[in-house]
Image (tube, rainbow, N blue to C red):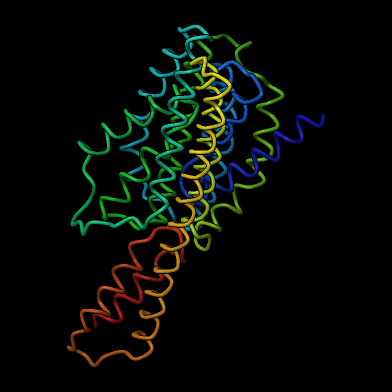
Amino acid sequence: MRKLLILALVGLAAQLVDGALGMAYGLTSSTLLLFVGVAPAAASASVHLAEIGTTLAAGVAHWRFGNVDWRVVTRIALPGAVGAFVGATFLSSISTENAAPWMAGILFTLGAYLLVRFSRPLRQRSGAGRLRGRFLGPLGLVAGFVDATGGGGWGPVATPALLVSGRMEPRKVIGSVDTAEFVVAGAASIGFLIGLGSEGFLLPTVAALLIGGLIAAPVAAWLVRIVPAQLLGATIGGVIVLTNARILLKAGDAGSTVRPVVYVLLAVGWVVALTFAVRALRRTRRARAIVDAATADTPAVGATPSPDTAAAVVGAAAVAGSAPAGADDDRLAVVER
């Protein structure tokens, strides 16, 4: 009972992180399951089965808050489902001994990516027009495959790619990716069911993760508007890196003298990433303060804002998740007028 309660709390925390960042539910949950010794295929299968419920709840919540672009959802979800099914079949076919380093390596890489990604603001490009299917299709296919084979990865692959395009609001990127993940999780679960059978799913674990995720889903859809993504992403990335490093070092037969050195280096890197994340967050807040001041002193119709003010507006609007999404867009429109 104590173990199931802990898993429920993990599911709750993972869903809060996922709803705020558009990623990391699978990464967080799968990392914990691998850490306690669950077989890689069973861990990924259980997490994806739980995600059917959590992503459905998250999708409904994001839809209610107006965070979903259904055109993007339909064009990324179906290729993602194909990739997830193929990935689940692949992971089910390899031995546990070979799968553990593979899965830990994917999780480690994605965790390191989170550290780098959230240690600095994301600079969006100024895009025009809508995202095309020839971009969304391959993106969904790759993200779905990585998600199934790594026990997580749909969000870390899909969310940044859509953010960098500059053609969607950050909150709609997160809401659309979370909503599409329902289809991806279902396809992965079918692939694991075919490859492993029903005994491949750890049903008590699935139930615990599901309950925690369902409780957190509505709250997470609201938190996406107010939670600073910088600190949250860097923190979770460090946890994932350190945890999966243990599995990789064990698989590589690293000596007792090497392991402490590696852990210290990774910990130092984590502290450095957190420091940069704090600095990026402070710069963003200072830029937003300038935007607020410029909004309070709205220029006359036809006037052109100063270069410093325009740069501050663009810089503040470029950071996803650290302020109410859409607030920067409204202030930018006022200054431009």
